Structure formats: structure tokens, C-alpha cells
Amino acid sequence: MTTGPAPSNEASDAAARSGEADGNEGSTSTGGREDEVRERLRSVVDPELGDTIVDLGMVRDVTVLGDDVEVGVALTIAACPLRAQIERDVVGHVESLDWVRTVAVKVAAMDAEERAAVMARARWKAREDAPETAVSPTTRVLAIASGKGGVGKSSVTVNLAVALAARGFVVGILDADIWGFSVPRLLGMEGDVEARQGKMVPLERSVGPGTLRVLSMGFLADEEQAIMWRGLVLNRAVQQFLQDAHWGDLDYLLIDLPPGTGDIQMGLARLLPRTELLVVTTPPVAAQKVAARAADMARKGYLRVAGVIENMSDFTCEHGTTYALFGSGGGERLARSLGVPLVGSIPLHPEVAAAGDAGVPVLLSDSESETGALFDEMARVIAEEVAPRLETESCSARLLSRVEAAVAEGEVEAG
Image 1 (cartoon, one colour):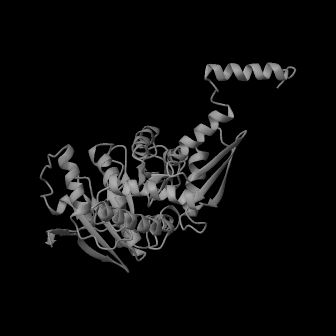
Image 2: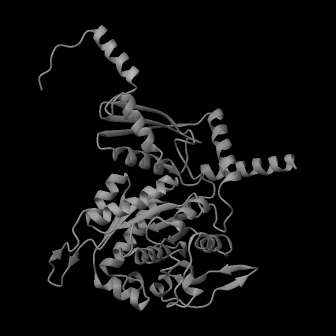
Image 3: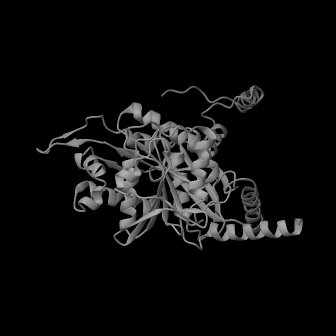
């Protein structure tokens, strides 16, 4: 590219003053790009505090040099167990900006004043925001979402839950698809929900060394009965499943959401602000675009989007030929645009549907099958990389206990 002579300093200063006067820096200016990065970092959510790292004051600085970005992040303590996850989320979300070439994360520990500010914000959220639920603070809450129906979201939820339980975890499944509940049939579970001390007791089954605990409208209503609820009634039903139930100590709670971005999704963001989303899509571009709305809804509610799962990715016939019946690449494209990992791609295979109809998830019907092995690998990715189980003594858990103590002390003094 040929360039003309460099402008004089006076000309440059005049141009800068003109730009400032116009209030228009331009999208390619350093200041504009720093703003873009900070806005993208609002999608990085501390899963325990349920707030963005920007609003928590964890982002100390953003430096943009051309197409290279460096982000300074301050954690409550230097050895925070969530450090690796937060670093991955920062890199993934910033890299999703189309002009970014490299992202470096510079991690430091907060000083006393910064920790006090985080505690103040957490204290405010503890008093003003989420109501209490029966879900343990150390439970990793993963909502399985989709932009539309028919993408196999419930099947993915059930098979992932079984795969996690087979790894020795205690896993809850909340079937929040109140109108279209299907989890009981997919698991082959039936029975009445009992009450103990005025609270529902989830139905339970063992899976290898692990345990599944399940609540669904399917245990409370006939399978062919239409549930004609809307708005506040729907939200109240989900609220009861979260508050008025004996979930016990869970490692993971998987929530099968109804498709779309309606009342239940918005209510869940208020009830459990530490919920994280796994977005299920199919390969076509149209499905990818619709699934992106579910992710957008989550981010507007300050929920962390943990990853993408592509279902019905391809079909391999008995002769070994593979066909992309619904196109290809939708899951990878969606994950890249959201700046999150692609947890896995599930091929179109008759055994998944047959296992669901029989009420025996694929990992239980044939642990040696390719599909069963794929769900086991996705469970490993979730448990080790995307959403590791929270330790009771993690940095944020310790911080929260101090916040709760401070809130209680303030209430006593106020009284």
C-alpha cells in the first residue's frame, strides 16, 4: 500500500481535536476498541458470585496494541481455584471479536481495598437479589438451552446427566420444560413425588458409583395431560422445584429448559443467578442463529454461557459413508461467535432415539457404543474443563461466607 507524507504535528493535533469535538473516535481507534473489549468482558461471569468481572471490579486494565489485547484481571486471592476458568472465558470472549489476533491475560491478586469493594457488591446482591433455594452453594448449575424445539435438548440433558453420574457425581435433573416434559420417559422413571417436612423429595436412581435425583412435572401430571400455564404460574412452578425440594448435596444440577427465551428463562436468571448455560444447536445456519438468541438472553441476565453442544451433526450409514444431512459446522460457528468452547458434536444415530423411547439412555444400554463414549467424553470435558465441581473452600465460597456473616451482623445491629 502506498502512503503519502506524514502529516505535521500541528495537523495531527488539529485532527485529534476535531475528532474529540465531533465525539466520534471511530470503531478502529484504540479507545473504541478498548470499549469493545470491556463490553465483551461483561459476558464473563464469576459462577459463584453471579456477577460480571467488569461490575465486580476484577478488570484492572485493558491494553490494545493494534490487533493484540492484554487484559489485567485481579482475583480475590492469587491461588483462586476459578483462575483457569476465568482466564479461559476472558480469552474466549475477547477472541470472538473479529479484529482480535492475540489475547494475553495478566492475573494479579486484589488488595484489601479491592476485596472490600467486591464484598460490598456481593453483600448488596445477597440482600437484594436472589431468594434462597434448596440448591447447595457448591453445586454447579448447568441449564441446557436451545433457541427452538426439536434439536434434542432433553435427550442431551438426560444423557449428559447419566454420563456425569457414571463418573461418580451426584447429579440432579430439573425438568423445567413444564409444558413439554419428557425427562421421566427418557429415563424410564415413574412414580409419585413424596413430601417430607413440606418439601418434595426428588425421585432417585443409582448410576454406577453416582446418583441421579430427578424432579419433573411428569411425576405430578399425566403424560398426555396439557399443562395450560403461563407467566407467573410457570415461574412459581420452577421456583417450587428449586426452593421446596430436598435436593441434598449435589455436585451438578442440570436444568432442562423449555425452548426459546421466555418466562422460565428470565425467572431462572433471578432465582439462580449463578446458573450457567450450555446451548444446544443443530448444524444449519438458521438453527445456529436461533440458538444465539438463547445465549444473548443469558448474557442480558448476566448468566455465564459455558459452552455449545451440536446435536445431529452427521449420519454414517452401515456401509461407512458419512452424510451431513443437516449441513455442517453450525456448532463450531456458534461457539466461535460466542467465544466459548464447543463441548461436543453428537452424530445423528438411531440408537439415541431408540434408547430414549425405551427409557434407557445410551450409556446404560450399551456402554461400549460410540455414542455412549461420546457422551462420556463430553461429561469429562464439563467436569474437568468447562465447569469443574466447586470446592467448598474455593476463594469465592470463603468470600461469600464472610459476606453472609457481615449481612447477618448488620441485620442484628439494625434490629
